[in-house]
Length: 425
Image (tube, rainbow, N blue to C red; front, side, top):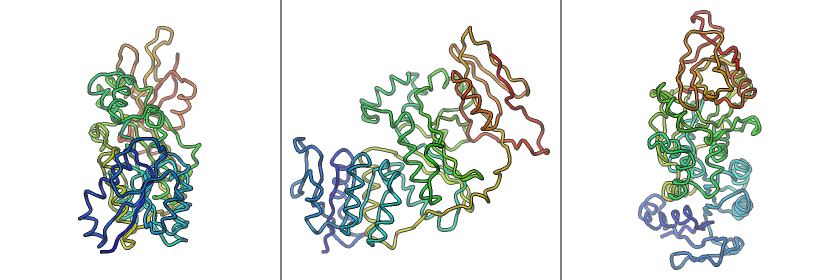
């Protein structure tokens, strides 16, 4: 039987899962590929660390040792950071190897360059594991993009932040308590900044933007906010309105170009993310023909991520399965670019004796509820107005209610609706 030789870069949680999955699913791989998959080499960082590497596999700290073997067909990369991962994969492609990566930071920065280099060298790049863990979102979107245009994508792309928000809501613990628990369980790193402040979700969103639209928005213009300022009382007040907090990344074309956001929002029970709890990820896509599609599944962990990498291994070895997305939408043709929309927002103002209660100068549809620390106010406003208030009043917390009804301010067929005009303190 033909043998396909692979090397694995990194032998942490994901790398070990990849090797384990190749061994445990060898029969399925042989049935699909008509060949035996053999892991020949593993790249490690620390030569002194004790590892349980299966017998017969060469391990090394020098990537050139792996290339010098001369017969590696596929390199699977599961290390962290842009470098040396990017340099390793460039070398692998130039040596005629297919590559598969789980590295979202590196691929967000260099994915297009790697894919162009792979085309020049007639090999393939798999990157399913870089976004949404075990959810096959890259393959699904690639299939979808053969005809459909995606008007909007939004996703819960980080399992750690979703787990924290879920535990805070269900068990009444503080952000700090749940974060410590997540670290003990291995859901959060010792330095959790990338997860809880939105960096991890941001890089995944940029990868999806490239796939959907063939480009990324200007990184400095993408609104990025984490969950560390969400507290238990805010959650309780939101639930009294019927809403739940979610940390959501979204991308959509507009007349001003691609608009990206990574931020906490609140969702009503009719929103597809309302019931997505724990470490699950979810992606909701609005497309031109198929309408709204929802994908949900485990977003992280050894076997879900390893599953995505092994599925990519099959994909790169069977080029007939490849589907290319990266379809550019003509941004000047996007509908609604000149229409001002009023969105529903949930605003939290500190209950502080030195800060009189804010009031809305117009509108009768405003609701409010009070807690010990915060007063919660439900209101309507457009993006520009809201972010002006957010800049001027940093003590106030503002959250978009995603999935709630929007009103077109300039549509005379609609009754006049309240808009946030002024806050007085």
